[in-house]
Image 1 (cartoon, rainbow, N blue to C red):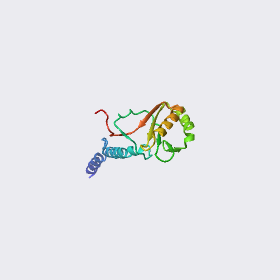
Image 2 (cartoon, one colour):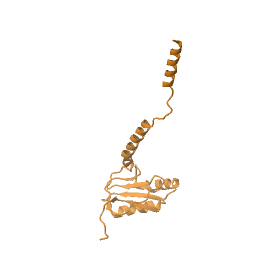
Image 3 (cartoon, one colour):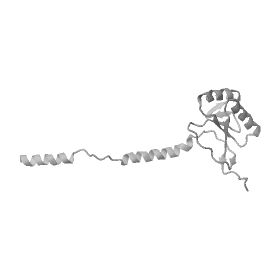
Image 4 (cartoon, helix red, strand yellow):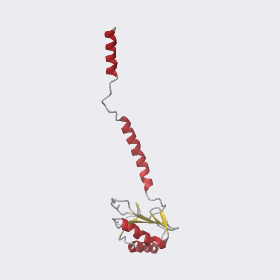
Length: 148
C-alpha cells in the first residue's frame, strides 16, 4: 500500500509540472484586434475641418517625421490652425510662436474650393511673413489631367 501511494504521488507530480511552452495565441489575437482598431481609427486622426478641397492630378507629397502643421481655410468662418479657430489678426503671431518650436518650415494649407484666389493668396502671404516658406497646397486626388 505504501508503495502504491508513492507511485500515485509521482504520477500526479508529473502531470502537475509547469508547462515550458508559451501559448502565443492570445497574444496574436490581441495584436490583430489592435491592428484593426488602428486601421479604422487612423483616417479619423486627420485634421477635422470639413472642406470641399479642389481635385487635381498632382502627386502626393512625402510624409514628414514630425506631425504636419496644417491651416484650414473654410468657405465660411475663421481660419483653423490644426483644430483651433484663429482670428485673422492673431494668425501671424501664433504662427511665429509655433515656428520657433518646430524644425520644419513646411506648412500645409487646406483651402475650400469655394474660397477666392485672393483670399488664399492673403493667407499664403501671412504664412510667409510668419516664417513658413515651404507651403504645401492640399488637394484631393482624381482631378482632371491636362496632358492630353
